Structures are given as C-alpha cells and as structure tokens.
Length: 156
Image 1 (cartoon, rainbow, N blue to C red):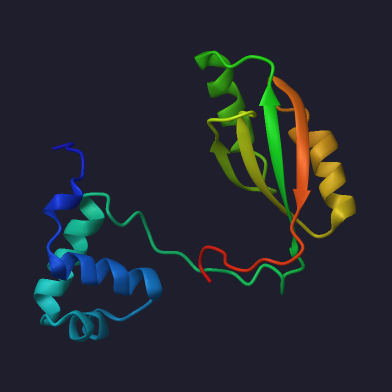
Image 2: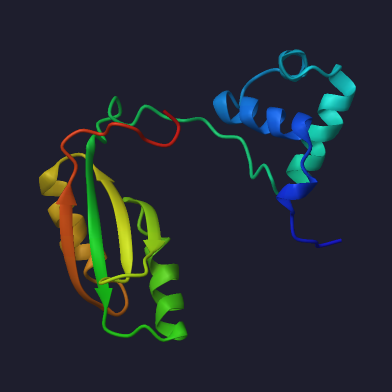
C-alpha cells in the first residue's frame, strides 16, 4: 500500500509525538508516552505508523561537527550550462556523492543550486570547490558565501 502521506490525517497526539521526537529522537517510549499523554502501547503503535507512513524518516545522532574539526561552512551558488531534466539528474546524482556537500537545493532564481559545504578550513573548501564542485556535470559557474558564524542550524 503505497499512498502519499497526508498531514491532515495527523491528530494532536501524532503532532505531539513528532514534535517531541524532533526535539529528542533518543527519548524512551515510556518518556514519550508520558510527554504526549498516552500509555506506552498506543504511543508505540502511533510511532510505528508514523514511521511506516513516512512522517518519520529515521533516527540519527547529531554530531558536534565543529568539535570534529569541521567548522568551516560555505554556501555555493551553482549555475548550470544545461538545465534539461537529464542534466539536472546527472548533477543531482553526482552532488550526492560529494561528502563535503552537506545540503544541496535546487533554486528558482538567478542560479540553479545552492550548496551548503562543510570543510575543515578555507583552504580545504577551495580544494573541494576546484576539484569536486566545479567538476560536477554541467557546472558553468559558482559563487561562494563564507559563513562567519552559524546562528541556527538543523539539529541545534
């Protein structure tokens, strides 16, 4: 049964479960149940359904990347020389293979993609830009914006 998830199918308990897990994905089911006002079994059933229906994509550890030496963030605008569907697919597949690209978004505007790139320092970023990003299929040009200080990031 492959149906599209519909947010209108979520009741207040489902929404509370999602909000609590977004805040702390490692929360024990008993704690989650207490927090949302359900007993353990109904909470587990709802959580499994939310996973099965695609509202919850998974659980992961959020790493302290600056502590791991990955505290240089840059955003790169990318313009492609070809924006036909085949070229976009080729770019998308190749961009997904570049470890330093943390996020890749197709943009409606004066450029085609916005990449969030995380490296150890500006020298490593320059190397990634020159050897990896600029070599991605159909890249015509790039423009870089270096982050001075992250204020709010996913997982924070």
